[in-house]
Length: 589
Image (cartoon, one colour):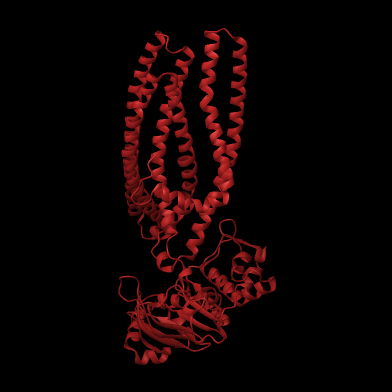
């Protein structure tokens, strides 16, 4: 079994997996000792068979024959019971151990830096959670424990044959170096194909998820045929890699089978010759041939095990690499932030991703306590990045963002986000009750507080009309909500959180005018006494704001009231001219 790998060795894989296995080390030790016992019992069965045959054929000793037969039956029954016990332990370990890995992956995903998540493919993350995690247990059990026990079996088989007759043993040993050479050669090729397949599979799953999520848009664009073509293209690419891997495995299997066939024929000829000369008994002959047959099966298992190990190391390396992704734990601040008035200042703030042009350049902005401002600009001007920096998703490359005079880079993310509420365009709604979804903002909220939050979000009246009220299930098992209703529930959730600062990120761009009017009324309710920032895409969203910050190519080119900007800012005027050409009111960016 070769653990050699230029990128991720077997030793590195075991060391990585041990951090999860340590918690269950007693179970793993019992599991291994059980399999070791099972291996020993199965290995000595042919010896019992040889003794039984020789006692009857050569010595006519029926008493000893019956005793050996009884021991044989008891051993076989014990082996069967032990197998059931081992399978039970395996089921427990498989569930609990993989849960540990999946939990670690999930925790890492929800704490990963926004810079990673913005470029991550959902298909890759889902594959890590639902497929790759299982390979950790399979590597430890099938590729380590079974390999060690399988190797011990092989040594026992060869040793028995060698001690019974060295000529037969020597012939049997001849096949081992040839088989191991084949295993080593094809194992490396399989490892390379495994990495390629894993990358292609992740891309395929990501594309399918995006396509399924956008089925409505595909139909509206009459792009069904095009999407099918892309589906076939991605699937073909994946199948081609899989076929190449299967061909490599088939070649390895055939080479090994050919070697074993030649040695098997040679052993039959030699054993027949030795039996005629009286150098071996019939029982020993049958036992040796049984052991050789078992050795062949074991060699085939070990070769397949080796190639499976290379495949699984590729999957485990993906988990290992993902867990090396920087998380928000690297955020420098640790102090607790206590927002009183909600004053926000951007001072010489600049930001850019690695090796890219600046997203924001020398941003200066002062938002007074209780003020409601809008941020407008064309797509890519840096609006969302700007508010994401307030939320601590990105750190300024230069400059300082302060709230109530405190640099947010010196405060903990938990204390920062606890006091800021954000309403997104795509609202997060879980399949479950309205109570469960709204109380995400405050899990300990009472019914009175829940109803008050829903009333402030202008959704309380609708909920009261439902037969189960707050306990109404939403999702495929319950009622379906409109976009406006989801937005109002998200506002209720934020109200329940009771933040000092509010951020509305493109929250009404997909709603009709009537729904938008209701949402704006809810905004004004919840915004009273709070500092609010709205990424505005519609004129109606801007009109309810005190001031407007105009972003252009990562810079704030103007900051004033809507009326003054429309009179003095040519770029702002241009945005509204473009809007007036649109049939639908309010598309500013």
